[in-house]
Image (cartoon, rainbow, N blue to C red; front, side, top):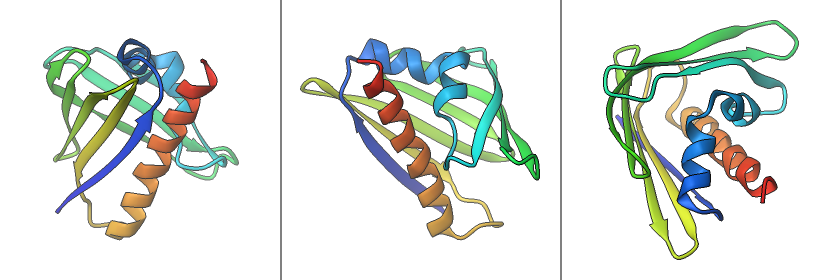
Length: 135
């Protein structure tokens, strides 16, 4: 099953793209809640390039690597990736003075669709706040 989430970022596409694809930025926004954080991130933004984000509970109780390979990259427009037998598409849609980020991803079987939607949405909303705070 495909799940789609989206958010609107009030910033130019160049700022949005840079914050989405820069490891130092990713470590600042890539968490679904305040009790989680991303401790390491790598980005090789090209077709066949790898990405990885180490996500950990701040209390040290759990962590995992969200990692995969980029399958399509259109700068300032689109990123497609594969990870753990699943795929995701991230669209960057310009509208007026904003950018709509729309993520569509394959669900997994461990968590409910609602939990997955809420988690990915929380990360997107955190991203929008991160970019907004820089303006």
